[in-house]
Amino acid sequence: MIIQGGILMLKRITALFFIACILFSLNTFSDNNTIRIPILCYHNLNPTKPGSMNMTPAEFESQIKWLKDNGFTITPLNNIVEYLQGKRTSLPNKPIAITADDGWESVYQYMLPIVKKYNIPVTLFIYPETISAGKHALTWNQLKALQQTGLFDIQGHTYSHPNFKIEKRTLSSDAYQKFVQTELQKSKKILEDNLGKKITLLAWPFGIYDPYLEQAAENAGYVMAFSIDARKAKKDDKAMAVPRYMIVEPLSMKSFSVKVGE
Image (cartoon, rainbow, N blue to C red; front, side, top):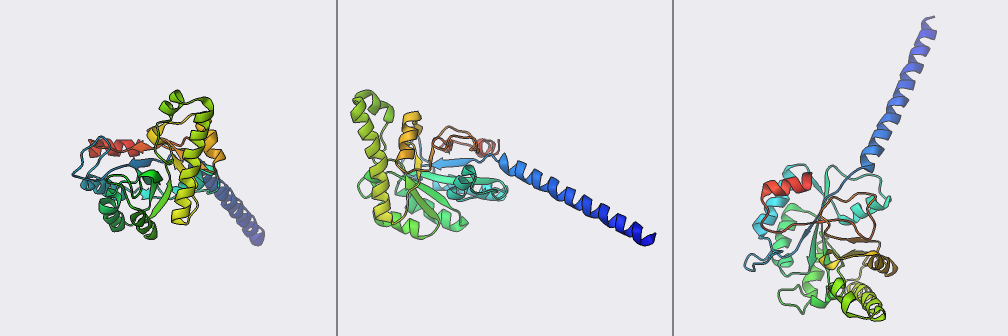
């Protein structure tokens, strides 16, 4: 009787254990399947050049420190892309991604030391026309040096950063189609040839996109594209229109904390 009672108890414990495992797995899947991820978009960090999209290095560092102090995990954008695609089942606690658009020289001069200090990954969305040519723009040597740190991933931002709405109004239908193809394909090839890496991600200039542009980006070989639609990214977002928050001054720390934590 004692042996039979022990066996019965063991069976009950085993059954409860398996039920607990199943419930844990379901909860984990549910939690990971509903993650909403803030993706932040920065531009120029030059403290001596005022502008609507500028931010001082001190302000940028204070935001990075706040994220670290408040339990956010600054996560490589490629990992988030894999999660959104369903290729990655989970992400670290409170994931967030840092991106910077255009190719400002201030990324090398001011952002790089902060990125090294906090050892964080950053994705740079670059339009090649400005590199080694535009005023206050990065050079190709600087861009390669950033890539070699292992902390910066370089991705595409079209070739010349056009306003697609204006181009669509001013060009014929055929000319516009050729223009879009050139902007998407030329940018990709130049970056790949100069940096020796595959370009798979795209940020839309001025956050402008539409179904035609989305399909053109997919046809050009991009797997995901990003807007500035000011909301968190989630799995059911369109692959060619994933939202980001554009972070610019003036933005109080309270407003910043609400934005990333809402």
